Length: 234
Image 1 (spheres, rainbow, N blue to C red):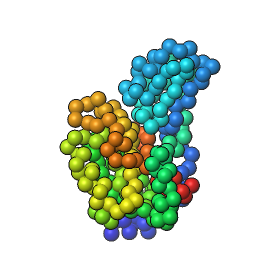
Image 2 (spheres, rainbow, N blue to C red):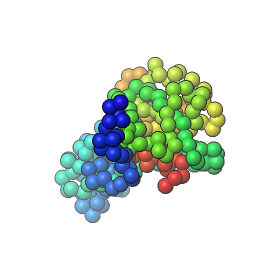
Image 3 (cartoon, one colour):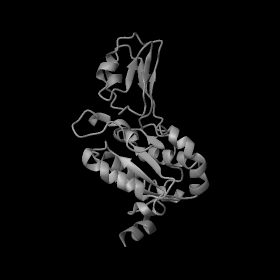
Image 4 (cartoon, helix red, strand yellow):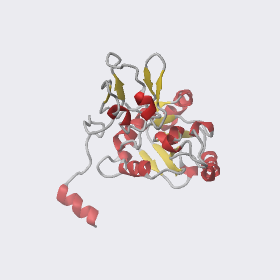
């Protein structure tokens, strides 16, 4: 009843275009090679091992947790952060499945969420993507309780030993082709927990990943962008 009253009082609360440019969001870290002096302080400060230095600095956006420690400790001010949240990337396996995915799921997608040991930050943002404001369901993307009714799974958190079997059972309970979406840096390669006891380093070593949505955690905007990219709707 309260929802209906709010609806009559405030009208539509759903934003027309959730993929608007958000200057408050975090995005890719940009390296100004003309300013970089090669001190490698950023490499030392990166707890996610996302920064490498050979001839020049390279940053793995899928591993990055966007903590800004590298930026704060860069004496030459060669690192800056953009506000472009569109970080989601298709994996090689996902490219191979594109034709099947688009043929079957170009109008709707049913997903099962699997938390394999996260801190719940990614789950909160995933929930936020489904609220009235962002309204993920308007694109035909919904979540179901049973994997037998789903087209794919959304995995959050580093895969702990105790959750590996549950993850595999959920994965194989889905009909083919099975779509796997890794949400957050932890789901991609363990994030800040990858060296912890009882955690696997990468979800991709257990099941093939089709889409990675980086971030710690990724914003609802970033999650929606990744989902629409998977469905070839943008």
